[in-house]
Every structure is written in C-alpha cells, then in structure tokens.
Length: 256
Image (tube, rainbow, N blue to C red):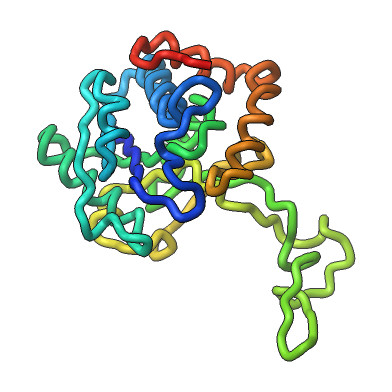
C-alpha cells in the first residue's frame, strides 16, 4: 500500500491572519500535523510520502528540515479565497506522482489548523477504507450538538420551523447527525483525479473525539484550543504522544 499525506496551507486567511504560521504551545502549528504523520510512519510498514503545498515561503522554510518532504509552490489559481481545497490536493497528488514515480493507492489530507488529532485517528481512517474499499472519500466527524430533525430551526416569511420537518419528541428518536470537523480526509486517487466535489462520490466517515473546538478559524478559536490543550495533553495519551514526539523529531525548537 502506498500513501501520500498532504498538508495545504495558504498564506492569506480572512478568519485569522497568518494562522498557518502561528505558534501553539511553543511549537509551530504545523508541527502537530507533522508529528502525527511521523508517528504513523514509525508504526506502519506502508510506503508513505509527505507533501506540503503552499504559497507561503515562511511555511516552507519552517519545515524544510523534515526528511524527504515534497514542498510545492501553490499555483496562483489555487490561492484565491474561492479556490477549492480539493483542487489543491489533486494538484499535489499529481505532482507527487510525477516526482516520485508512484501511483499512490490513496491520498490523506491532514488540516494543519487541527492539532487535536492522534495517530490512532489516522489508523482508523485507513482501516475504514480497507473495510469498505468502494468508498471514494472518507472524512472525520464528531457528534453534532444540534439535530436538524429535532432542535435546529429556520425562519421563512416571519415564521420559524424545523430545518427538517419531523414529529420526533426526543432527540434519541431522530437520525444520528454528525459535524464534519475538517481534520482528516482520505481520497481514493481515481475519484480524486476525476471529480471536483466530495459528495459526488460514495462517502464514509470515522468518528473522532469531540474536543469542543473543531478547527482554528478565528482568534477566539485559537485561544480556546490553547486553553483546552493544556488539559488534554495531561489526560489524553494520544494527544500527549503527538506533543512529545515534536521534540523527538529535532527540527522544531520550543520557545514557550
């Protein structure tokens, strides 16, 4: 099995300026994603390549010492506010395939603004693909705190009604609903080459622990995640494993 991990980081961000370059508990935010990938590489016998696609020279320099990483300049057409991330991932895959002369079995994109991730989450993602080989895309989710069949409403013409009409009197009766937490996506390469939209294919999901903050898109998100992380690194072995591994990689200096 051959796997390509991708990290996509755009220089501009409307929600939180420069978020991809921020320090998070002493290390660059991207270090947490690289550490999870590195742990996976240590614990598997699969062929794994890692690629960064970015238009940020600062981000490229930040990880230049990570062994054998493929660093790609993001194309201008992929650097706008409306650019599809899936198109960036596809371009990264096609470039990596050409550079390494490998036709990868699948591509896994890990979002660098989601540091609350364990190596077990990555293994669970891959096991899902192994057990359901017909799936085109598999992504990570968490339990939703609201349910459109029970306690989510919309307003139309001055009147409020349920988002999805139903007569459920208890949330337990309603269908299970999940939030996509934007942490991990696995793409079948044939699907990735031929499609522009995730839900054009057959989708599956793996459930991750809900850490309250899904990803970083504002200063408030960042502050809450830093606050939550202090407890998680003490209580959650998988989170602590990733944090401890950053220093073991020897390419990032902690300046707390």
